[in-house]
Structure formats: structure tokens, C-alpha cells
Image 1: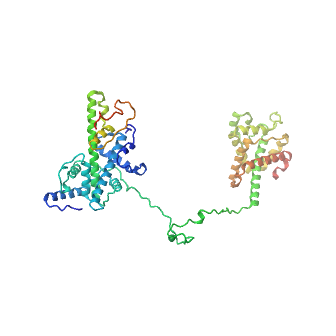
Image 2: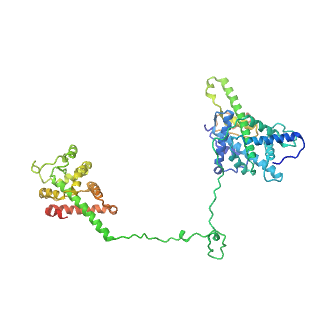
Image 3: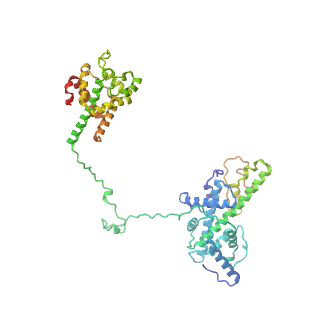
Length: 368
Length: 136
């Protein structure tokens, strides 16, 4: 179907009939009649329709229907009845077909039952094949039952004021228009919260410290440990600093080069390999804490320079790994996610403090 | 149903035929659904609880539409025959019978309905002219 000329149904409303049909309310009826008319035309022999032509024909069919009903009701009313009967319809049909002419139209009939229109219809019904409408049509228009506001009497209330009769709708409940603030009563114990927060921070710092110790224990070559040989081979391809760890004294290297810088760079650039490298370290945190401390003690005195820790990207990452470790331990971190940025700054300061302490007082590591 | 109290056998035959016909209407399902007919009849003030009368109106409307469609089909076929006479090439192309506004307006004119189709562009020489060239 194509839009023949592009004109819609508005064109047909130029006809003289009352255009009481507004597009919004009648869309369903029009759509249904369009389908029905298309079916009739198809049975006549058409294979396709122009959209505008089909619209026009459907509109005309609707007008025919309404005209027939109106004429029939007029005839019924003229006879002093409110309900129409078959003869009113036959009279209406005769009126509509008068311009075209039907058999026996000029005769004066006493009995409408023998009218030519009826015969025409009988012939049509006898000849045409039955084509029922394709889809079931619901009863329309659907009347929506509006839920009315109950009156004072129905509510059982007395109206506030003698000037208000009780059959009027009731006034709305005061809670609908008066705003009463409701405080969210929740038992908060600030002291317990602080204690819990401090405990979690300590745990975080402890794991951070152990990680840092592993960094230092591996020497100046890099942060990878002797236990993660397999994973380091991947890192070695990308970054010379991620090579296998050198045993102490194996190679003459300047110990002034602080491994923290390399670790920082490494942490900044490649995150995946770092995580892999730290995975055993994280596991080691849970396990042999004292062992790491012993290893750290041997190497730590070599590193004397001030440690400039840039934990920008790495910290975010380390923080996540730490969170994983904490979650594994079953600690709820819901409260601490809120002030994460502040925590990070705090952590950073505390981490620097701890590392400074660890470099200066290696014996007190286990006491943290 | 109110019967005309007229003497004569012919009327009774007609009455009987009518009542039979109305009864037979219940078996025949018109293409126009009953709900649609009821809706538009109610809009125009037609009140009747009898389903047979609704069916009668539906059948009458269907007959009207079928008549108009048949006339339009004849117009369409006449037009196709005229075209085919001139060009044999388009015979296959115009095989499909399509209901157009032009055929419809011609068919409706005989029924007393004046449907005029607005032209889009002034590309045909007869645009905007008085319908002297066309049938009144």
C-alpha cells in the first residue's frame, strides 16, 4: 500500500456531514472499519489499495452506517417509539438508496417487507460468500469507571463546619498536605565505629608494609620475589626492571638506586604483572609474617635514602588488592567506602610513616 | 417485531420471507463486526436490543461497500484495458488491481458522494481546472 497523493482522512471531513468525530476518540473504530472494508474489497477482487483511497472508503462506510442509524431512529421517533424495529431500518435503507434507485422504488407499498431494498439484501446475502472479520473485536468504547472520592457521609465523618453539607466529597487526610519531618532513627555508636575503622586501617597498613618489605627484600633488581619465577618471566619481556631477582652480592650494583622508585614506575606502568607479582606476597601476609620480617632485616640497612613514595596509580591498585585480601578475611568494608579518598591520603601518610619507622627501627617491625 | 396489519396473502408471504431472512442472518457473519456497528449506531441514536437488526444493518453496509468496490473495480479494469491497448509492455506491470482515489471518486459519484482528491503538484495540465472535463 502506498499513500496515493499523500492525503489523509482530513480530506473527507470537507463533506457536509457533521464532523463530530475527533481523531482521538474514533481511532479504534476507524481502524477496525478500515480492515473490514479492505476485506470486503478483497472479496470483490482488488489486490491492493492505496492508503488514501482505503481511508476514504472506510470513512464513507462509517458515515453510511451512521446515516442509516440516524434515519431509522428518526422514523422510530416519528412513530412515537424510542426503540427502532425492522421497518424503520427498511425505511432508512430506502432513503439512502433513493438516489440510486432500487427495484420497486416508485411503487406505493403498504407493506415494507416486500421492499426492493430487502430483496436486494436477500440476494446479496444469498450470493456473497461469508467473510467473517479477521480478529475478534472487543466491546468498545470501553467505559472507565471512575473511582469517586467518598462523601462525608460515606466516610463516616462530620464535615468541619456547618456550611459544608455532608453529601459533598470528604476533605483529604491531613497527612497528604501537612509535612511532618521524620527522623531516621538509627542507633549509631561513634566510638565503636572509630575503633572498627582504626582496626581496619591497621590491617591495611600491615599488609601494605609486608608488601613493601617484599619489595625491599628482593633487592634493587625489582619487586618480584623468588617464589614467583614463572610470572616474572612475562614481566621481564616488557620491562628490564622486572627481571629475575638478583641474590645479594651476585652482581655489583649501586645500592643507592632506591628500588622504591623502580617499584613505583613499575606499578605505574604495568598493573597486571604487578598484581601477579604481589599475589604470593598477599598470601604471604596471611602466613609467614615473621619470615618476611627476617628477610627484610638483612637488606633494609642498605636503603638509607629518603623514600619518596608516589602512590598515585599504584595506590589505587594496591588498595584494591588490599581490599580483596580484607574481603577474603570476611571483613565488611561498607562503612569505609564512603570516605575512600580521605582514607587514601591518611593511608599514604601512615604508610610513609611506617616505612620511615621500618627503615630506622627494623627491630620494631613485628610490633606494629 | 411490529407487523403491519394489512390484509392480503402477499404481505404475509413477504413477512414470512423477512422473518426467515432475519433468522438466517444469524448464521451469516457479516464482514463488518457487530461491535463496530453497535458503536456507530449508538452514536447516532439508534436503540435496539435485537441482534438481528444489528446484523441487518451490517449486511446492508457491506452490500453498499461491495457495490462501490465493484464499480471501482470496473473503472480500474477499464483503465487497464485502455492502457494495454496502447502499450503491450506494461501488460505484466499493471496486472495488480489497486484501488485508487480516482476510481473510487468515479464510483462514488453515482451513489451521490462527492469525493474530490487534492492534487499534490501542478504537474498535470488539468490541475485546478473546473470539472468540466470530468463528469459533474
